[in-house]
Length: 207
Length: 207
DNA sequence: CGTGTTTTTTACCATTTGGTAAAGCCACGA
DNA sequence: TCGTGGCTTTACCAAATGGTAAAAAACACG
Image (cartoon, rainbow over all chains, first blue to last red; front, side, top):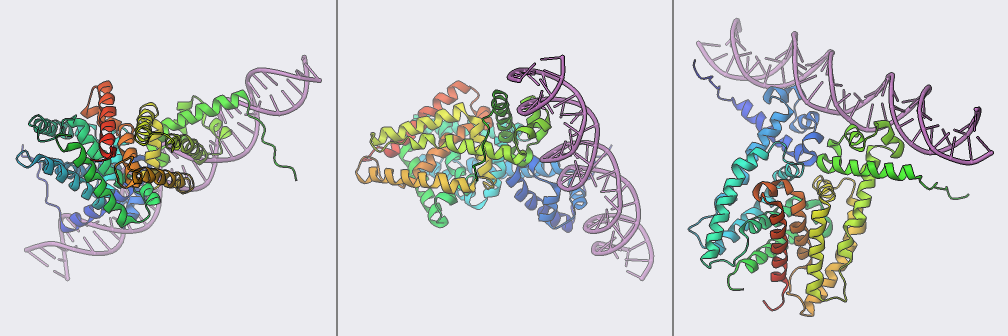
């Protein structure tokens, strides 16, 4: 039998799917899956609830679509870590890209954070199939750099997780940061500088 | 007029309130406020839903009680930062206490994280009235240590937030950590060592 | 235009959820 | 043993929520 033909989506479909995903990102990243309601998403997207269901199979389908899209983009900065580049500069570049993502896409960061905190009910397979291999590969790369004396020796796994912890903190805990460091612009500048200094300090060989 | 007399709670009340708080911590830290249901909490606490309401005024009251209790204990490690002690040892001690809390009380850490990620709707006042003053006080203390040359100079605000980010990461993102570093015991050991090394590196004066 | 298709709306529905009312249970002192 | 007051359960309820059916409206296109 012939493979089922997927019709190519119309302009309206593309536009509305995007509107829904954006609205859903707002709502899910603020309330988590269970805490979000279709009515909230519908209102944020500027359309009626049954209209959401016309474009997506249901609440869960929207959430899954968001997480899938996220998982792809989210790992890009790590993928770019280049075995051919200068080790220290490569890692600092990675740190900078992650900081930039936290500033530009805080909602995505929070969506991811909430999903993980809640036990990754819908993302555990992705973590195992996408994140883990990439993580292992880059750990090996970094370990190689350390053995070659290009970087100070340390646990590469802990290093990468430290980078995540520090860079994502500023998106995820933004509310707290704003209370403690009211000047937003100055905060980001200081954060960038501090994070970069930190990793330079622990990575520069021959301490 | 006489002050309203608060009857002292019976043994049963103390026991049941504790059971409820513990159950609620489970549920709220996994689903957030909106995502949690009274039925879940009731079942986890081993009692009927109306019985919950007998002990607490409602869902929100339970959540608030949890957050209040948390806010008190959560800041203790920072309060212990002692102006009279050895600066480097004081801060490393703080880091160790935070790591220990993450290991022993991951649910509390997640409850806090979810509340902040969701915009701290019920905790913003606490942040401003409790956390902010303590934060400012300890920043000043650390700044003093730096001026005296006891610690490497850097932004004390960023330093404290870095400590939070790194230490809480292991509780909040536990699910992810477990996927990437399956050996739990080894993971904690490595994490402790890495975090401690990191802060020693950036704090030791005369780099 | 007119017609077939896509998109949107209106009116629902069953279930879940936070919460209440009121009756029943149980320990304990008189 | 009886009553009294704290504790618990059963039986509900109104609102919210995820989702459906079907008609109406908007659109594409010959």
